[in-house]
Image 1 (spheres, rainbow, N blue to C red):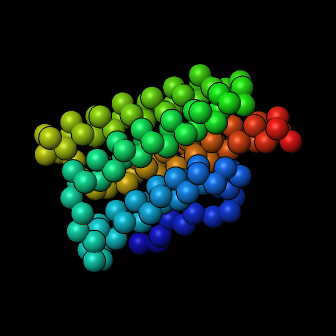
Image 2: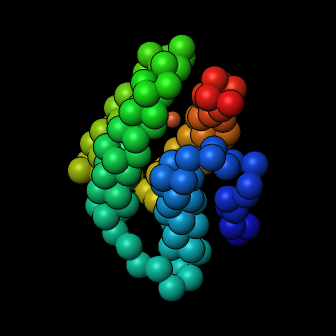
Length: 133
Ligand SMILES: [Fe+2]
């Protein structure tokens, strides 16, 4: 299975946010290796815990950055972050019901990558860079 690579088109110019986005790629690749049985044996509980911690940490950094620069799309962007947290809660419920598979988590992150990081985050970055010059 092909790895999901981070590439420079995802650079925001904010080193903290870039490092955190790269971490999400690390998690996705780790999940793929786990699914393929390639030397990774991490529990579903651990992945869900990582995603919860990621959301708390990373979203607060992005939200601080957006409000520091008066980003007009703040509320809309924050809503997407809140929806991520709600989705992780739903996945956690599936976990306790023993209905969760690693593929569910990976597919969700892939969707998030393409739908939020590549679109909403990059749009936010462009607007802020334009504003601060
Ligand atoms: Fe975001």
